[in-house]
Length: 120
Image (cartoon, rainbow, N blue to C red; front, side):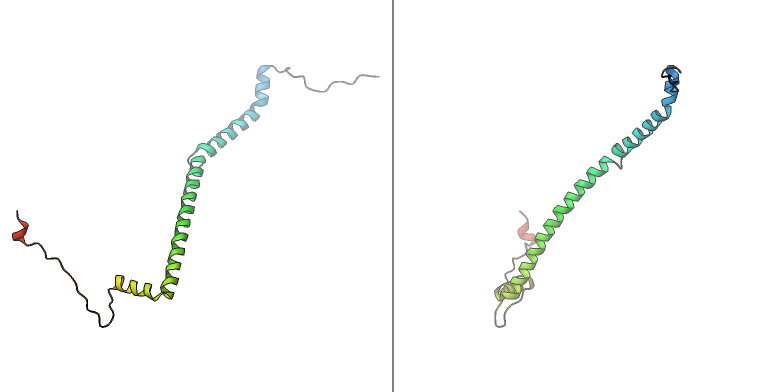
């Protein structure tokens, strides 16, 4: 059986610097990708922005929950006002200062301190 000739390049035939030159494009690509990944993760629009946005999202979710609770409370109060005449009267008296016809309103006013009594 005849032997086949070996057409493969021999490793190390070009020496140390030859191998470095052969690997330069790969090392350059690795360096560029490393720089891009570093700026993506640690730049001002990378991970710090992600964490800030995540915190903002949580705060907004909490605020939405509080507003939903407030909205439910206001809706319940509206229903109560529509159905309960005593609640309606209470609001009319306290917030609007309304009185029933025939009622007498007494208003007590504290006297303002005069300049004579104000001095020691």
